[in-house]
Length: 304
Image (tube, rainbow, N blue to C red; front, top):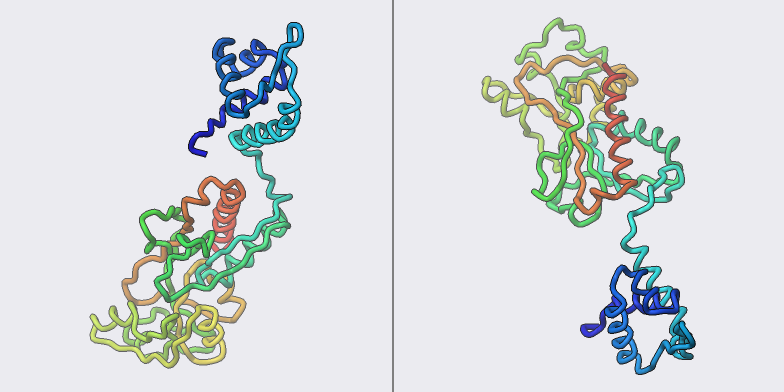
């Protein structure tokens, strides 16, 4: 292949179509002498005259006719390779996307996204991947196509887009004593029994660090890996958990939970989406990102 000039295929195809050196030269926007030299190269490469004169035209030899079908196929495929991609239609696309969605969004955003996609792109299959505690670069390795949630700790090459900002609040069942407190103090908050959320099983987190600065310590009764589990536990027991204020509002209401501000200075929760550059120009992937953006905006508007 080091000695093969694929431009010869274009010239061969043009000579087959035009039946003359002049016509082939015009087709390829080159000069007749240059095309004559190319025909000489073709004859040397294939060891055959390929095209011989018959009056004012060139006619293919038996060898040229034998090669003609394959030459036309290769030339057509090469042209198609460099043509702009056709506009993809989500309504007819059949694809599978692996999404990793933060557990904090699982009870609100995920159902809304799936409902939206089922109506506009019925051929899409969404495969939800769990958040991992291992240092596996899932986006870089192609294990995940799109991540939605806290995307602040990613490799430099990963493309990130901010979607929303939420704040964490505390949630309790409506029968819990703190549900009727006009303003929960740090002391009241620390004195309650808590659910801690950690995929790695850690009971100590940012809340505990802030309480320690005030000389306070909370009692963590149970550690669970997901926000969903914490909300269901709070519904059934006199416990306190934390959740996103806006995006968890409808889930909290459905479970008869009351939320109140955490009496500590905690950072806001930034929500975004992240993807690897390999998918940046994929038309259906671009469309999916646009739907994520729209659904997130709609969910925030409804919750507010």
